[in-house]
Each structure stands twice: as C-alpha cells, then as structure tokens.
Length: 222
Image (cartoon, rainbow, N blue to C red; front, side):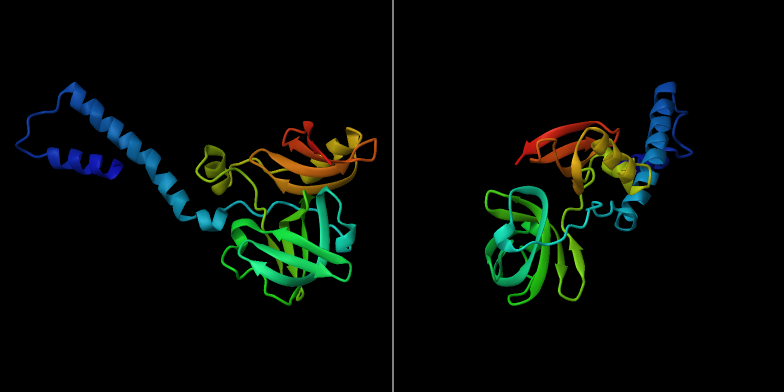
C-alpha cells in the first residue's frame, strides 16, 4: 500500500497539474514518511530466516529408564521407537513404554523412524513425555521447543533484526538458586521469560516462570 501511495503521488505531479495546496503537501509528506518506515521493515522480513530466534537454551538432562519417569518439568528417557502416529510415538526400553508427544514437528512422520534408538528430553506429565529436544542414535539433536516471542509480534520483530533482549542464562539460574531452589534445569523459553524446572525446599519438583528481569514465580508443582 505504501508503494501505491508513492506512485499516485508521482503520477499526480505533472506539469499541467495546479500547484499543490498545503493539505496535498502534508499528504505527500505522510506518504514519504510511511515509505521510509516500511523499507527497513521489508528488508528485515527478507532476512528473517537468517536472524530468527535460536532454540531455547535447554539444560541437558541425563536419561532415565522409562519405568523411572516421574512428573517433571525437565526429564529424559532413551529407548527404541516402537510405533509412530503422526505427532506422537511410542518409546520403549526393557522396563516399559512411554507416549511421546512431538507436536507439529512430528506431524509429517519424518522426525523419527520405527526401530531407531532416540533420547527424548522434555516435560513428563499425565502419562506423556512432551518432547522439547530429541537426540538420534548418530548424535543429531533436534530442538523442538524454539521459544522466544510469538511470530508477528513487536518483540519477535525486534529479535529478528537483533534488537531484542537475550536471556542471561547464568544470571537467571543464579536468581533461581538465590530464591531457594536446587537441581535447576532450563526447560524452555517464552516471550520474555525462561521455563525452568527445579526442586523446592520440600524436595518437590516445580516448573518456574523466570522473567528476563530475574523475577521468579511458580507455574506448576508436580
């Protein structure tokens, strides 16, 4: 639409046209300002694939046997893919089976293959392991929880051109420790916060919302 305004303004500026009045001049200035603002945004959109928000800084978690999976904000299990059903698959080992949810990343059916051995890290709750990261047998790691601001928002646009706030993970985990939590694991990232799994003073697992400003609040107790 900005381009159309500029073209119309140029087409109207012919030799036979009467001198533009104050209102017309103001409209033309507004069109030029709009064009100047739109140009960098358009250039930023072209480069989004290069500047897109990186994966959430997940803390690696050592896998446990499937039988040992307990409700947690950040836990991992290793086993063989027994069955694949779109965005979910069955992970099995010698101790049992677990349902793994991969969301949209697995809907095409190419994320894992039946019979391969994988390690899945994520949140285990209500009998399902909601994958945040998946490591194949050959060492390839796929991060499913990218996190960051939702696409199309102002924060997302700022991050896309390198102007957004970046989480200071060491400082934020230190803030969680100062609040009295232990066994601290970064589990994902939201628009302006980290999701952090940790244990409270009572030993129970918590999922915490840790703002980029260091504020800590509990989201869920397991």
